[in-house]
Length: 363
Image 1 (cartoon, rainbow, N blue to C red):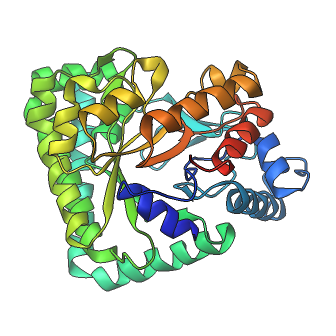
Image 2: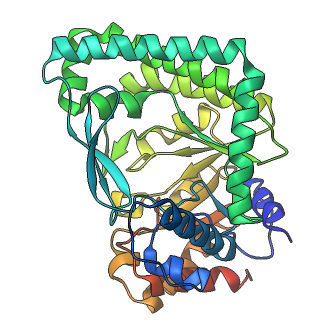
Image 3: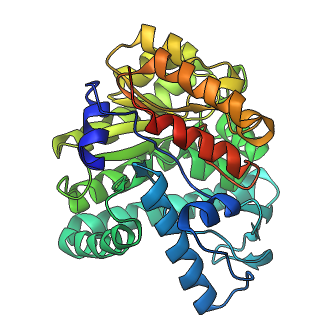
């Protein structure tokens, strides 16, 4: 069974020769293990970048059946200022980037920034609608480069949201909340502009021959609870998620919905919005593979193996036990992996244990 066959059968809730592994591989020691090479000293040089990205792709090709990220991440810690005036910090250990300082600190200036962001989204939507061929050719060139790095591992075709994460991250929770209370129309207009942009890009780039699935996302929850009220989500988020999922479905794609946190209060809404799968099933936030499977038998599940405590602090035997139970709870229709990403907080030997359980097959 090829990796794509295994992944597609899992998404269709059909039996497979073994449980496929889906993850984001960011753990340096695991990259070394699965690539069979030693990482060079990390520095922001083109040669180093080429080497570590090649090694990451090689490791992904050996370890994973599916992924949505194929590069190594930041090579050095650094601060920089982007075109909008945000001061950002890149972390080589955390393999991520965060905002250190915003170009505004009050509601009026945040509102002005959001108006400009909304206008830029509408302009980008018009450009994608006017010249879809250029957008598609650019995406397919990028995708070919990705696939060349990771071999026959399935890479999700793209990942898209309706703007909630981008807006909330840029504004920060406090200013987002104040602005939504004082000028709720601005938030709604921004979400609508981003949704229009992403749907235009969807119709421009869609090519299911290259990949069977996309990630549609919105981090709407945290440990034990939602980040927004169900009423707000049903008014502002889920209808737009439905439109985005519908656009991808028109082209034959499966839509894997991603949100961290405890989602059971709105799980029915996620499914009603056209989500075919759910990720990452964050167990320490209160999520349960078994409960998700029982509530929605047709939903495929991806993730479920805790990276914050189990993969980072547990033993390989503990990981094996949890992985085998996860397979019993969620198979078929289960792509096993960490609860979002296997980063440098994870122990390489625990990732190897998860990989070995996947190779055991299914009874």
